[in-house]
Image (cartoon, rainbow, N blue to C red; front, side, top):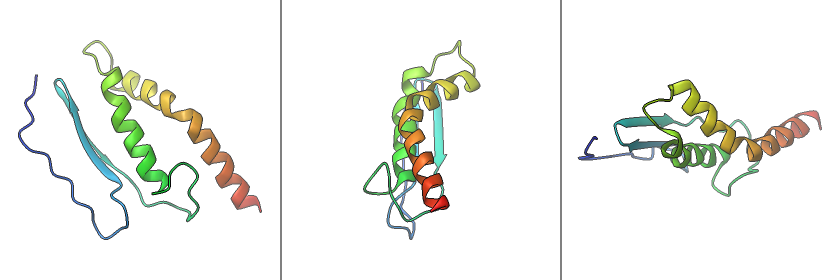
Length: 98
């Protein structure tokens, strides 16, 4: 098991920090969020990228085990956050069509 000594994550010039770091047992990760493509926010008052990054960061420890591959872990995590993401895809596509 790893022992976390220090974690640092500074917000850049954007309004919100779209990046995060996390760890669980013997696994650590860094999630580099992207700049939103649209000004509309469908999942969060902050921005949708922040929401996705936070959801993924929260779900990862639930699925990390030594007997699962990275692919299996990520599939399970994304399955947990995909239901609200269907809404955002619909909203974006509707926004583009209008």
